[in-house]
Length: 253
Ligand SMILES: NC(=O)c1ccc[n+]([C@@H]2O[C@H](COP(=O)([O-])OP(=O)(O)OC[C@H]3O[C@@H](n4cnc5c(N)ncnc54)[C@H](O)[C@@H]3O)[C@@H](O)[C@H]2O)c1
Image (cartoon, rainbow, N blue to C red; front, side, top):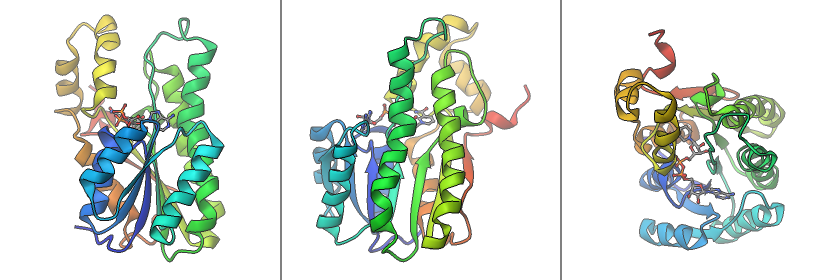
């Protein structure tokens, strides 16, 4: 297990799903985590269950004020910040001709601009820490397109390019920046994808996932990669993105 002892982290969107598993994995490695989620009650409940000095903060990543306050709360509670995991994200699965301006903009605002907001707010604190790291949650949707997912794929592609750009900018400050690209992971987000995909697919969603990935990803599969990239064992890894997709994107057939 990667040693994360003493590390002080923020995980956005950590009240449930992949973010929750990331928070658990960081704590298991010895970190303290501030869970920042639009679901403030869920964030506080998750933090209480995790223990180890974790805190939960109500935070909508669409709000610069919320994000700034969440960083301040983590720094106050922990005395500094070593890790930022930009995990909060949404997906709306619709044909491009049915997507509204508001929906398209909302996806970009949360998935891309939210990542920018948290990065900008956290850099001053991260720059004070030894071996600081940022891990951004992209997706296989950031490496290829897919029907019904035009806005989501555009947003995750942007997260990958943002990751690369910021990694180079922050290298001199000793802050590494990487992205993780999961395949389909068993969370509420994947549950919501099943109906729209089945409406355009000749085979049931579960069978499609078994065919493409072997199985659904588990949140813990993704959390393990985040812990690896956040750890002090990867000092020369920055500006990269890593697939955790059971071979989904490797298979021509
Ligand atoms: N589940 C998948 O198949 C999958 C695959 C690849 C990438 N991802 C990415 O992983 C991340 C987590 O996805 P998940 O499957 O756990 O989703 P989820 O819907 O189960 O959980 C998302 C979490 O983010 C929070 N959130 C939503 N909007 C927010 C906002 N504006 N501000 C703060 N928090 C907000 C939610 O309250 C929730 O706790 C997302 O970035 C998603 O795009 C998911």
